[in-house]
Length: 476
Image (cartoon, rainbow, N blue to C red; front, side, top):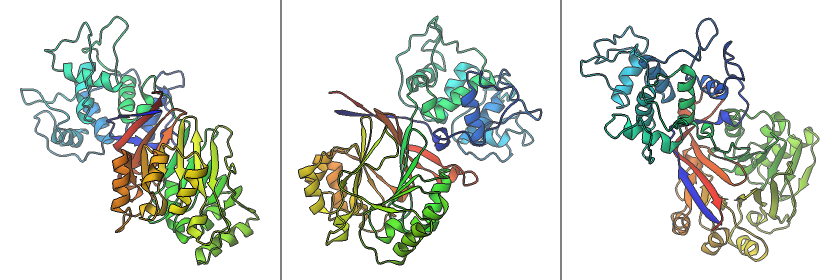
């Protein structure tokens, strides 16, 4: 298979697209029949747009330059505090003054030669292309041949960027209509596409997600299946860490919990998960644990009367027929408990993940001899420390992405391990920088990393698109 990735330039992506709109405002005049219904609710969910006191959104109303500045400012988390601007027609009393000033500082918007901003003028499709291209730092340009767009136009290079990103397109008569004034619903659609590539027409919506949670120096991997069921593989080193991560992703239930290793960095938060997340099944490596966290985990399972089933090589753990979750290695009698870790491979269509827990080089040698290891995403063993992730193993797995589940302390990941993976051509991610989310369909996926600065009310996590990429698999 040939692996290909395409970078996206959106600034912030909300995980709430993948889950139901739990708190979206219901505008009186925006029904499911509106072609931009989902886009409007998405932006409302994020607090980027709002309605009017009468409960309406007024989707057909024209968008002013001041309103555009507010929407862009909220999307980029700019400072909206009212203050003096450089424009003689925008005083600190103007509701958009703070966002206009901030957007000017960020070189997103500008005024007119006469020193005015003209906040009440309406935004055209050409102006929208300029604003959003600058706001989201679009770089790629399309080859366009619209009959009404010419190289001498100020919006020309920005329209090329918008069409290249898939945010905007032309009309059937081969025009772009750069002077057409935008309605509120249209601006919402363009903004939603800029923020979240899943709204771009023709993009395949994700139905599956694997998230590598930022729990510190420990392992915790959340799997969300196409039917809405969930699996948590390991629970990190503490109740507080796993509680925070599951709440940030709005997870209310864990159908299946898997403990790959008895160490406290894998099961420290397991008692919280079992006590609070309505766990239905537990799979356990069968390895003996000695830490207090392990005893709390066992006691929680006993109190809830949930049998801990011992994982076996070749066993299927998935609660969903569309996704395979196979145990590639398990050994409850291993003399070295690290090498008794459950090694798990997750496969959804053409996309595969390999989670290696604490397994060392001896297990890697066994796996290379007995299993098909190829995986697109490798969660490295031992938090990226030396003693695992050998060069032959990397070659056998052939990962597109390698993930280190660590808090970034010295030696994690080991520089030699990083170099081996980089030399192979893998992209490297670490949970030390935040939770890592992969979302995809059966032949493509996106990967992006959490940005806690935009979490609202601890209900939804936001994700920085500095690392947002789309990967696809295609035949050679």
